[in-house]
Length: 475
Image (cartoon, rainbow, N blue to C red; front, side):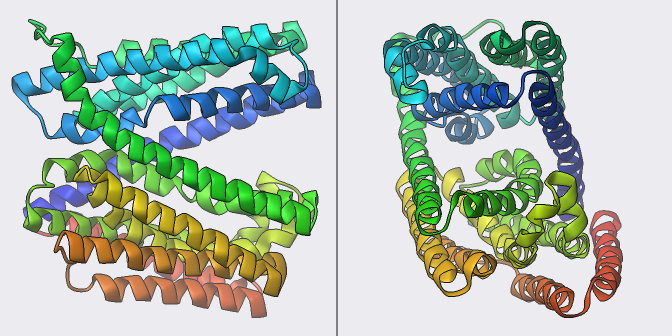
């Protein structure tokens, strides 16, 4: 019981810590985008998005998801072994960063042509090759902090990197106008790297001797798992692109904008809960991945905590859906409320599948991870197209629910059959209770306004708080 109390407390502390960091990051992003729009205009916003997306794209395909793939080895190592793994991770992050930088330089004329239709931005992409390098190096250091559970330093590095990057680039936007875009993008990555180096885990003394051959051998497993993760990311990006292109061709660009706005609200902003919890959950799960009993306990406990936090958020979100849409977008986007109202109910199954899916990564099972993510992506695409053809934009909310029901079943099959693991008693009942509350809120909101959903949200929030308090304090 004391172990579970400690787990509950640790999870909630990590969530509050990284939830705050995520909120600060979003606010900084909103401020930066707003100021670029005001001082430079739509051209500045467009350039900023194009350059950033290019850096993100190249980095995604050259970093091999090193940050996520290395956490398993880092978190399960100690002493001399940990020192060796850290050296290997740092060397590989530099190598992959230089690979990405060189690729950016070589492709710069073509990137300019593909992105802008001429070669006038070639120099800009060459300059941003440094950003690609820094992105990779920073990820390596953040992986070490996360894998060694130095969550306080990780949070500070992430938050101050974002804040200092925005603080320094804002005057550049004001004084240099459109000419500040490339220097500002690079400066942001520089400040993120600087803050990461300030808070990074210091290399062990004496530093272990790791040969080039050992670096290749030790890093092979990291890169192999990272390769499968990269392919999974590519499949998901491709499927998202295909559906957006389908919408654009079968509806119009305005519909694409509505879908993207709703998807971002549900997947990104509500996803802050998952991101915050994962910072502590993944390393902890990796350390016990060899024990079936402890893995089962950790997964079951994580599902419980995630649902107890998420279900009140779902009820509150549905109760305030119109206000939320107005805050993040505008009145014209109120058309997406039926979509987000039902889609957010599906996050109950997302929490369950997400908690089990981390076992696949904790065990370094790249093939199984690629299989489950590909199945998820194909299911999402198929359901979205069918739902849109039958019910339009509103139907995409139901497609989101069905998507995560199917994904939860696929992940559970791998979890149960491949690893012979189960979940604790009461988890299934808690999951369906949470789903039932979400459906009730969504249905009542659709039929009779917001008074009853608000009452439900208050009651559920109080009950969840009391349950979480009991889990922490009970001896």
